[in-house]
Length: 419
Image 1: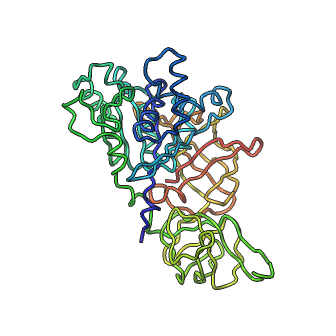
Image 2: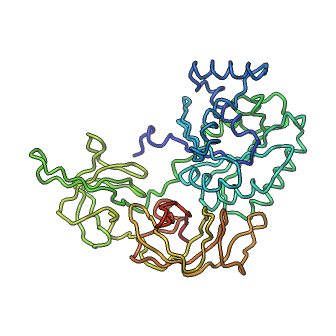
Image 3: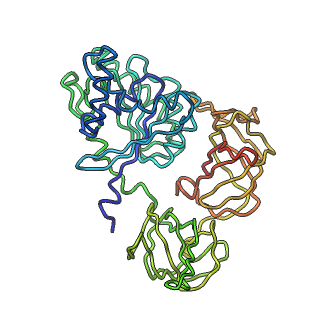
C-alpha cells in the first residue's frame, strides 16, 4: 500500500550545455506555477529593471546561487523544491560546463527523469550526447528533450523535427525506454506551463503537464528487500534498557513487521519486531523510506551490514566489474588503490584492469588506452578487500552503485555502476 504523499515526489535533473536557457526554464516553471515568494519576485523585478529589461529576467530566480558558484564555494548541485496540486518536485540543477560532469552524475543519480535542453539554433551538440549517455548509464527511467529558444527560429517545425531525428538516431543506441520531445520557449513561456499559440503544429503536452503525469511509482525496485544498516541505536536508558534499533534507508523491497529476515554478512536469521518512523510504528515500509527496525533476536549487527530476505539475497563477491565516471585530474590506472563506499559499507579496493573507455559522441569503445582521465567514462574490474553484497545497477540503483574515494585527500574521485 503506497501512500500518495510518499510517491508523488518527482525528482528531476536539468542538464544541457552552457547558455541554452536552463536557468530561464526553471525560473519560468517556478513563475508560471506561482511557486515564487512575493519578496523573491520583487527582487527579480527590481534587478531586471536595473539591467534595463522591460520584462522579468527569469534566469535571476535560479541564478541567485550563481555568485557562490563563481567564487567556487558551491560548484555543487543546486536543489529547488516546488509543488503543484498534482505533485511535489525536486529539481537538481547541474551546471552545463564540461568540467561539471560530476555534478550531473551527483544530481541525476536519484532522479526519476532527466530534462535535457537543446538550443534550437545549435541542435544536438556533444554535451547533449554526453548528458543523454550519462542519463542512460545512470538508468534514469524517463528523458525529456526540450528544444528551447523556438522563438529565435520563428517557431519553425522543420528545425524542431530535424533535432528530434538527430537525437532519435543517437539515443536508439542507448538504453533509454521513454523519451519525450517538447518544443518550448522558456523566455516567452511557450509549452512550459501554458500551451503555445505559436506552434499549432505541435500536438503533444506542455512540459509541466508531462512532469505532473509521467508514471513513476514503478521506477523503484519493490521486489528485492534490501536494508543497509546506517546506525545502531542503543540508548541503554532506564526507559529503554535493552532497546537496540537499526536505522537506515530502505534500498529496495517492502518490509513488514513479523517478516523473517537474514542479516549479512553473518547469515543470522530473525524476524522484524517493529518498524518505526519518528515516533510512529509502521505496519510496513518500502524504498526509499528511512526507518528504524528492531528484530526479535539479539544479533550482533553493525553499520555496513545488510538486512535482506533469506530466499532473496544479493550477490556477494570481491571481484567486481563496473562502469565508472571519473571525476579527478589524476587519472585512474590499473593498480591504483581507493576507498570504496557501497551503501553504508566502506572497503578498500584495487583496480585490476581498465577494459575500455567510451567515446561519448560515437558510443565506440576505445580499448588501447589503459587510463581514464577526468570526465572519462569506462569499464573497469576491481578487487575489494572484503566481499560486497550488491545487486547489478540495472536491478537496483542503490545497491548497485559505489563511489571511489582518494584515501589521502578524502575526495570523491569517481562513481561506479556495478554490471
